[in-house]
Image (cartoon, rainbow, N blue to C red; front, side):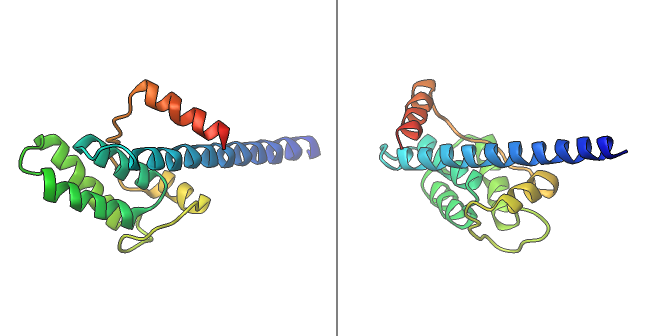
Length: 144
């Protein structure tokens, strides 16, 4: 009985540690991507990519502002599906999961990340990064 209990506890500790480490690795990647995208010339793809990266980094208030900026600049000549995705992401920014109200920034909250896993609203990934940009961002992560 003790062996089974030990194995179950070890399994859950392993799953927690693995999830926690992957969460921090993803947070670091997307924060570096936000910094990288900040220095690129503003275009619709760059604005959407930075807003989606902010959503992954749990900066919902900032992402909401960026989506509003996108709608004010590019809504007249944007694709209809992209506009629907942007509006859905704006709804997700205002209420990411049932226990929140209004866009807030939850910086590096692992508990919020797990709540988003289980109860989160649907978000659309609108990140337009080329493979060479991804490799550049990963090199920047390793150098820091």
